[in-house]
Length: 330
View 1 (cartoon, one colour):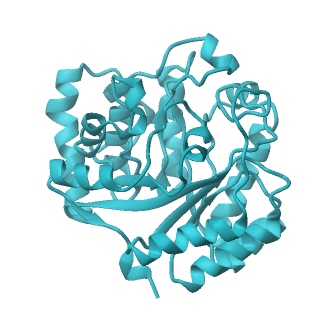
View 2: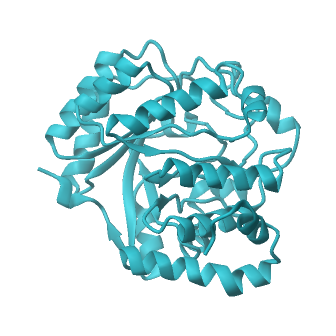
View 3: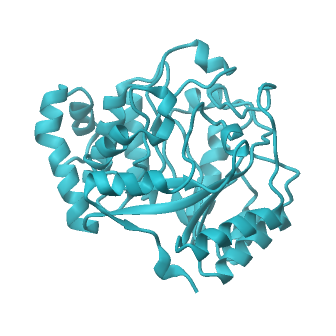
């Protein structure tokens, strides 16, 4: 059992060979015992890379003039999402920067239309008012993704100067109490993060009883202040966090689309994705946006999640089946 901060720290500090001998196989078994040998597939679309925030680690921060900004019209979002549904993909993850000019009514209309097709809709569009969160719930949003990023308030407020830890946690509380599923998580091994802080992050995910942990290691994004402060996050730490979460929360979904040693392969590195699956992760994505927009959705550099062919390859290499959510569709 893993229950306490001390239990988590023991694993975070554990030698790699001991981790892969004692912890990783247990996490993998818990996953297959719970869900079977299936991987959860979700289509995704970064429909706007315009953001008003100045987060120190994000490539889409308002202060980064080097990326080409775009805003996908609602009718195009709907068209691409319904094409995915027609191909048998019953889930979609719509994500954007905090774009105040996209039009909240446009977002409601998109969700309403996709729900009429039976799609499972996850959104990640930033912080909204309680009234707006309730409106998203009322049109059928299944899951809202709002990461706490780091559980240390001082660190959060430094790295996210456009909001506050108190405000973020209030938004998380509203989502949690709304009836929508709450997806949340952290950035793993950002420059200056301690193992104690990482353990607190994991405990917070457990406390929030999240539906999905959208976690990846810290990856430096070009033209961001934090990129000058340190190198990328340690890959072993993300695998340890995945395994710990799987053991602590058997039914949580966890991002398997992880980066590997070659950062140019982005989040579609087959070896890294398989490594994540083998410690208990299960969620794979493919991007609906055509280039160049997909490449300009640069929360991190070199995301590379275009098209479903990668998903099929991972299924073949892993021996797992793909759960595309097609049973949701009407």
